[in-house]
Image 1 (cartoon, rainbow, N blue to C red):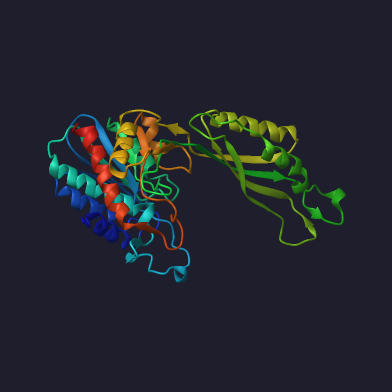
Image 2: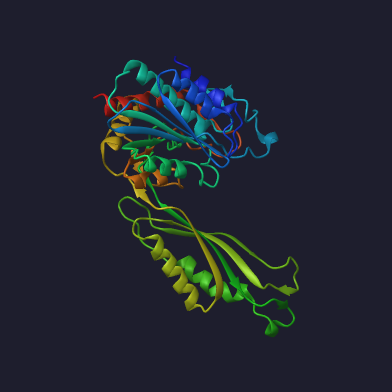
Length: 377
């Protein structure tokens, strides 16, 4: 059994890289691929390290995209292994980032190494876009690298994001798109006062209750063949001084829309503002768009990926747009075909995060097969 991917994944996990730290992972990748003739460009934007590295001179450009940063470990005492000392147990590799997504990066790198060694004169260009800002604000990572590529007239044709897409078994799901994500901070203002004299105050919690009931019950759309219906969720409400005898002067809410292609960012903003005005609320509203919805429903990349999974795993894959956001939202608007394919997502961001060892080698084989279909066949 080839253990190249396991060994690289182990090395990456042992490099603590809580966002936005990279921990030397990108240098390790660049040094390995550099031995095979890959040309590296290291792009640092503020505190974030990014890597753009390519092999080949011209033709269609295929990119692997991923991130070396990981989320915090949580209470280390709750882990059964050291989260930054990768450890094998019962066929699984444990450690922070094992699934999200150092295992996927290791599979990408080894697949590219094996492919270039076998086909040194392949068609097109193989590239890696690696950031350390995916788990953080996502401001100085892939977003900025795409701006750099646009400024230099570099266009990605096909991109696999190595996020952990699989559910019950490797390859059973690939992401062919993601819903848009629109966040808001809403402050509804009232007048602070003594609870014994409500006629001298205005309680913003009471004033906002009808608005909250209505906005929470709206059916925003019914989705479509590619996307589930748009969802609205309040993630936080905060008001008051912490004592029971003071009517608060304001209530602050955080909420999010995960929206389909049936609605636009402007549609959602307009509807929320109209509802606030309908209820005659005194408010301040700040918006933050995390990403527009994107979709790669057909094309050479989807076909090659489904063919590879069928050939190697013997299963038909489900093409899905479910889940949260990914850095694919920055790549898809350039016109690239973008899909997400990676290991199982059942332990991501959890205590005792792990990945099945056999899946690492199988994923490597799938990635290499896709490269062969797109750049050789």
